[in-house]
Length: 546
Picture 1: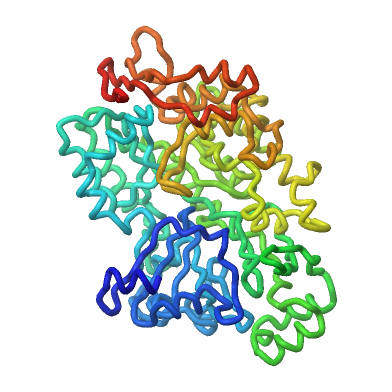
Picture 2 (picture 1 turned 135 degrees about the vertical axis):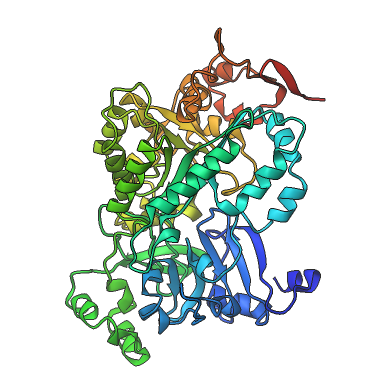
């Protein structure tokens, strides 16, 4: 980061943003720099710096960035132990803190908005606009003819305005408008849905006349993500919404490897007392005495099931108004409580009689058997990113120990655990008769949509460390369906695309290998190497490999 400051020479006080920071790997504390904040302060104290996590949810900043925190009425108070107990108390689940309760540099979800900093999708917006013509060419080379941009915030519309100046755009584009309810709260805290949907209708109308483009979907984030931060002291809990409390693991870092030492007993006398004296426990003398006596930080006595980014009542009203107004809602739901909240909302406007529900859900990292059955009954399409449905020990240590009590790290993939059985439950949803779709969620993790790697991992559930619950894997034909007919169903365009039959658009691709035969011969791990030779859109060749 110091090198970036020297190279780009931002003006003093100007944000310096880095995209695609890997938040879950190689951020080990040292004796000199114990926190992300200290490390970034060593790079610069004059420039606010933000590392934009490669998942779009985890970010990190320095003291100059934390000092930018402002209230809705524009009072710049900064983020500190004091303001996290007062003006910014609602941000507590999303801000990492050190042993003294001071922000440690980890800022998650919407905290970057409070700091007035750049976002993963807007940090390089001028560059995107300058090179908008590359977008269809790149997607055509990957065999992609239809997309849903799942988070089109108002500030991203200029990118599409620039794109649509191109002579031709060989893509069917669904714009899922990101209009956050919290941005429409009035002084009383109530959401002004009338204003929100007036904006949604205006954008839908703006793009109505452009061929192959529709803006009739809305994105709604129900929760955040399931990764905690075991390297923080004390460890930061995940913030995704769960049906049951997170466990509080006690980690030990040895030889650059995390180990699980045990778990905090949340019902112990010490924890009951710590919860009763929560504010007093922030006093450093008390904290150090508590750690000396108990072996863990008193804040680890707190109970948490994560947080809904919009409560059930807001989600329900959002969906009911959207449905009445002809919009499809595309939910981001990670934790099992968020999934249930989304399904409950869709159930208020659905009877399951239509062959495909207008509304859909993305991710579904965890879902109960009961909600998998309801997703099938209500015919709600679910978009999985199968590249993630694999074992990744470094990442999984940030998730699984908070959900399961493990005797040691060797139990990370215990087959009888709830997480192992229900993680990315595509196979269970398929068996229940549900609609399994697929997508990349790019630029999360990588800017590359990598459709064939996703198909490969939908079948194998393996990235080289062994299959992560192969019972949740798909057959090769079901994996192809997730990218074709079921993708079309999710986009509410199954009458146009998704299968090759009379009356539909001639959108198809030619590839360099028979991926069905590969899977049937036990060579599904080669599907990700597939190259597209030709892409056809609306009966015309739009890409031909050299």
